Image (cartoon, rainbow, N blue to C red; front, side):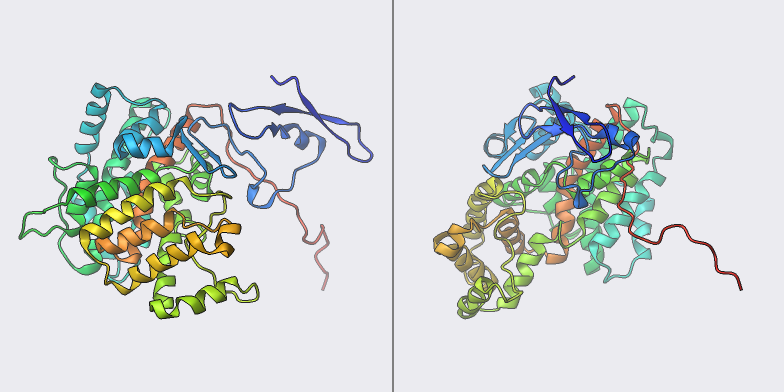
Length: 425
């Protein structure tokens, strides 16, 4: 219990003492749970000043550009770890031993295939359906194939669901792409690592052996790792809220995919490519930068600055290095959109307007460029984001079920009509 108190004075009521709690790092929080018994609610649209839960998974200090997973800085993880090891860390709380990582990797590898009947599910979608629309459906449909192992109170069922979701998301994501272009689905291979397998299923053909360049595989692994979790964002909060009702994990992750699909959340790297296409040519950049600086012009440069990071996005530093490696490997310096992107990056890092406002290129800017260079269409960008973020969602779901929680029930400030009588005729 906390010895510190905040006192709330409300006219006509006795003072109300509210406990103040301190986390291991970050701002203190005022416990307002007793206010409902006093006939009061707090008002916080978007919950931007409300801690909706207690969590040990991820911490963000936006003012100082810090992102920690279980206490480890994202820069350290990017330099020394890989996506599956980071998955283990997020789920279990500690880095695995060599034996634990080997067992975890084997569990993921052994679960990458999906039921053959699920493939028929795709035929119900139009060929031109957005891949995120398909992902929402097929991930939710997984619960129909494991209906006898959906007891959230059973630790073994939860662990199997975690492994299945992490393992099958690359398979389903690649299937969404293959379906959209009319090519046959490519089965996963046990001899490839997580990122290699995704690229194999995305670009492989039954008529030829896949040849996965290690630089591209490392780049995909970095993209997965840097998007693995980001604290209590809209989609993670959605997964927790759905999970608080006791919904099965596949339904919860499908709800997270639906929330991520919003252009204000997961569509940022897709918006970067849309912006580059709108600019069209390097010769138009100065005019568009001028539009971005004009406060009366609605045009915005996408991929610069971040709502949470007020200084710099620590993930962008890692992603920039990876971006340079990929562009050098592929030799795509003549691609007009990538030429625009590199010129915009130079302006943002040198122009005083951007420097003073801390509008640095963020992780979405660089990941969008990488995905474009690899040959992944923009419609797949948010799907890949969902693939990577699944481990964060399922870690928060798992953490919530291991804690004392209540079903989510936000309150409201009602401004409609008070009770009134039905008019007599």
